[in-house]
Length: 208
Image 1 (cartoon, one colour):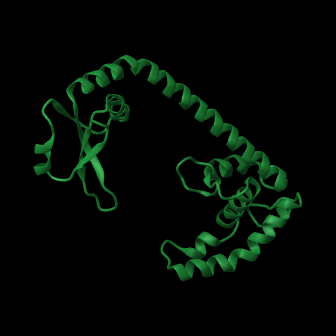
Image 2 (cartoon, helix red, strand yellow; image 1 turned 60 degrees about the horizontal axis):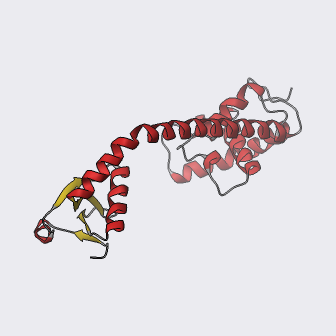
Image 3 (cartoon, rainbow, N blue to C red; image 1 turned 90 degrees about the vertical axis):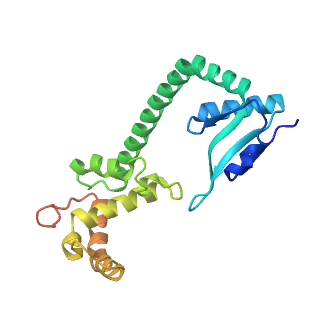
């Protein structure tokens, strides 16, 4: 028979699964991928036990020919060391790539804003570029220069104005927009000062 994946939506449909099939729970990506590949190579069907979710449907496991399960498990065990080595190599690469990106982010901060406090450059870059944070440094929709500008503006707003004090602990969307609008001129002034190479005193907000 030709390979195809048949979805089973309730237990009554499982009676149509041919003999010689074994159920394997989902969760191991390598095992699932390998079983599907072997079934495709052999032209054997694979049956997915499906579950309806609140946003999307997903497979909780698969009925697969027993010989395919044995072969896939054998390959999983035999390749475990190699795959772990690849994962470690990839992890090292990601760390180096992220460190390079953060370093570049820092360099652009200093280039765009030569008056930016040197003691704060590292923390701003680390915060903006934190993996998984969904902060401005992680977006792919903006240029690096624009991401740096927005990150520095946010830092100026939170750390060099009374924005936090004005906003308080709880606020509505309207209050949020109003406070941001109120401190916007001060933020622009601070950015212009940093851009010109002058420094802003953290204590009194005056140029140094």
